Length: 278
Image (cartoon, rainbow, N blue to C red):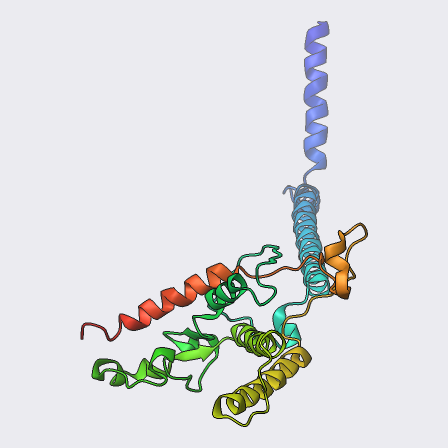
């Protein structure tokens, strides 16, 4: 009895709820259905729009961060970069081998035969370097004739080639050549008592050569194409470093001259290979 009444009561409740969903014409209430449809779809649309908005914000923040980081890197790298040789007007293009070392040699001092041999050894290769392609180093003007053909007629196989004048003076070697010329004449005047003003062809040639060398060395020093800040001899230096106010003992970064002369000989061999045996 109780169960039947409960079932009947539930049917009446269902009928009432169903009836409330019917319109006056017996059709479902379209406004109610529309409201329920909005209740279902509006949260979904809002979630989709919110997700798109978040993605746009994240992309914008990321782009701004990358742009700021790139600008900061470019600014700091350009401001903190060390000056290069090019900044001082020095041509950074060079075929020369690079090696840094520090060296002090006493066997080049004085009029001894040992000093003469040592000076001859480091200057006998002339002051030129053969370049296969001068334009590669920014050189578009012709060089000078191969030094061993300077006062001799080259063989036809060499004279017919366009590289006969592809030898270029290296200023450092030229400077050393001039120092050696001045040293030789100084030793002749001081230690041998030669009359430099005798008027002979040899003495006049020495004078002309020396005047050229002094002017070339002056121009080289004023040009300052190799700049090194020199201090006095370090405290505690031995007496031979400071005797005569010579200022020895200062550390310099120098090329390896022995390697430079080796490279000079290598390039002469390359040049000779272009005409020998033709």
